[in-house]
Image (tube, rainbow over all chains, first blue to last red; front, side, top):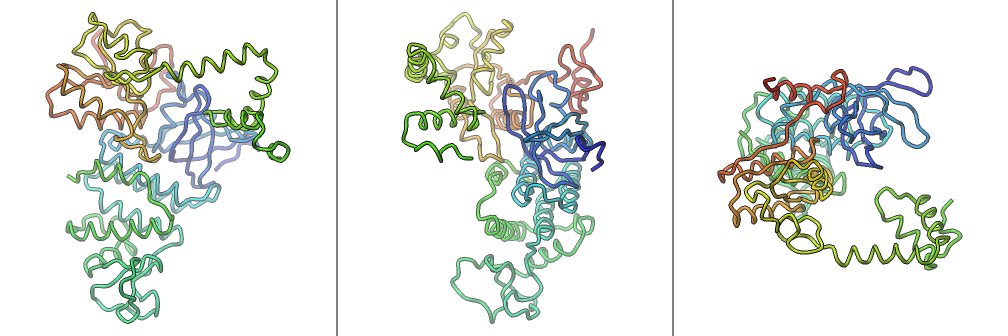
Length: 256
Length: 204
């Protein structure tokens, strides 16, 4: 963030969402590397001749000039860096991108910077914009988001007794945030989800590796569904609610 | 300081403030200002406002064909046989119908969705009038659907979803042109608008 003077500042941002306000304005919820999640008004953004409108669209990565306001800050200039055109022209990809933005919105706290999450979101959108498959990317995004938010699940040692896990099928304890070894299992708990060795290995790779190392992985449908299910349940447990955009994503995603 | 510290919630003025506060774009301060303005209004003016609200709520219904707001069902546009019954323009809100009608160029019929798909706000296709559009297409002979949702992300998502649903039924599906608004400056246009404007260029 560069300060021009105390009343103005510039920052890069990704627009997570907006709500209409007044006759032609929008209140943007942006995610930035330096200030984290914050809200700002884009005046006149809904007018056809607005110089801001097209730039401050949801999911756009933009360079913003902002004036500090009494209540909300005001966007004075906006210039898009990435428009993610391919995402916006494909309903399946778009629903995935909105899910990512929704997750960041839910996991982030206002005015709390997290550069790693910003980079993760930006880079994931760039990947989503340029490649064809997306389920592994979504799982990677979820895993890294959990890591950068301080809620990374324990996948290598038993979450209860800390002993190293044997290569086997296991149970993932959603309420504890990790795998339970056979000795620590409490049967019939609704918080435990079965995790096969194959899925566990995928989850471990997602946690340890960079995206370039795993992007060519061939994951079976079965493992893909299993890892999705585990991560979704864990995320829902952490947030204490369901992510709203999941329903639409499930409705429209048809993996090519 | 909270206003309710001084005013018990069951007094008429507190109730009035509370009701105003429910309206979109009205914060607590505006609600108080409006409520106190109403109290100082001549009684006949205040009654006129109350009557107008009740009349609007009682008389205005949704057209069973196009879902636009109307006083009679079907609405005046749907019963007008001089309009082209084979083209349906799909819009987000009743105000969009007014905007298009003002231009006097479109002579077909409308379908009002009453919202857009907004996944992050939990608004899915089942929450807007897409089902009614599908039912309508089964009953009527329609040759063209114009998708005229707003050219923003949620509007485009809604259009793409409807397009996906209708792509197999053999109706021509079009959407409004994207590009530069008249009277604007090229230098302020965003990448998406400019590239769409270039793609959609026409012979002079």
